[in-house]
Amino acid sequence: MLTTAPAMPCDGRQSATAVAVARGAQRFLRSLGLACVSELPLASGRRADLVALSGDGEVWIIEIKSSVEDFRADRKWPDYRLHCDRLFFATAPHVPSAIFPEDAGLILADGFGGALVRDAPEHRLHPSTRRSMMLAFARAAALRLQALADPAGRFDEQN
Image (cartoon, rainbow, N blue to C red; front, top):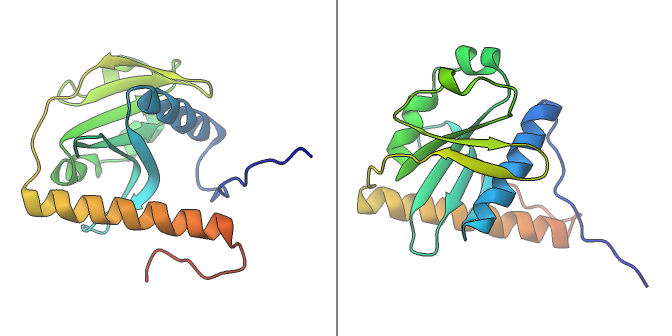
């Protein structure tokens, strides 16, 4: 008997390009040994596109940008530095790399994988912020797994 794993539902806010970039970036990050959670609410009220957690507790935030217009329209990304050890952008190969700031990392990705173009400088989190981020990451991941296992249950991330 052939069975398929349940899939996380797509929330429909992202373009097809953004979904492909996120998938490829997550595959790339996993190849580096990092675990990812997408669309993670932050204490600031913002929502990070991807948050990646290393085995030693380093927290990366990856902001997905699918086009030049997407990058230019969004000026909230500097706020993400308060919630991570390293900040990256991930974008599609057709988006010019030159538009992204030099003080953030850069990942090029498509629906199949990704590659590191520029590493991100490290700015270590305060221990209390690290704890808060790790708890948010763990709770979101656990609630999403529960929701997949019990689609009729109530597992919203706000409670």
